[in-house]
Structures are given as C-alpha cells and as structure tokens.
Amino acid sequence: MAKAFRKFLPMFDQVLVERLTAQTVTKGGIMIPEIYQGKVLQATVVAVGPGATDKTGAVRPVSVNVGEKVLLLEYGGTKVVLDDKDYFLFRDANILGKYVD
Image (cartoon, rainbow, N blue to C red; front, top):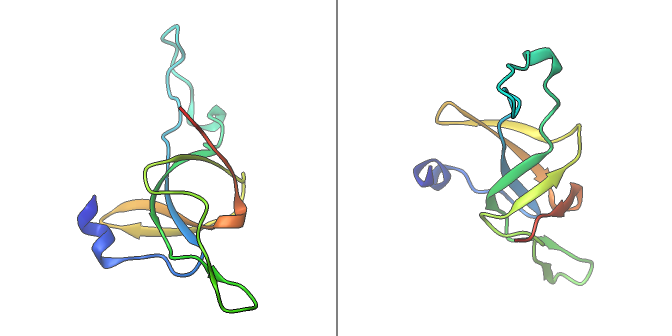
C-alpha cells in the first residue's frame, strides 16, 4: 500500500481515504444482497495534504492523521484509483468526525 502513495500525495487540505467494506453477512449468517447494503460512511485515512493557507499565508494543518478512522458525508469525494484499488479524496472540512479508541 505504501508504494502507491509515493506516486500520489494530496495537496492543500485534501485527505485521501479508503472506505471500509460493506457488511455482506449478518451476525446470524444471512447473506445481505448488494442492493440492500448501506453505503459505507466509515473510512481509514491513508494520506493527508500539508494543510490550507489562511488569509495571512500561514498554513493551517489538517485535523486528521494517517491511520485514523473517520466518518464521511454520504455523498461527495473524488474517486481516485491507485494500483487497481479505489480511494476517495475529501476536503478536511467535509470529514464529519473521527473515531477515538
């Protein structure tokens, strides 16, 4: 995975995430058809940009770090394909929150 990110680094306040996979089987073992699987709103941060500049020219860092699990908007993000894997770019402001252990 790290090899792909040497080729691509987000700019400004962009965050590259990998969405978690949808649940395909219930706890009882029943298979869930793809049309009934909900859209996955959780993701893992895999790369972050340096941050956005404010009016004074100072860089305001991104609020998440690589490896953190975050909650995303249902719609949005830009799909990026790296090494035949789907990732999504979101602005830092479009990330709703992060999960803490």
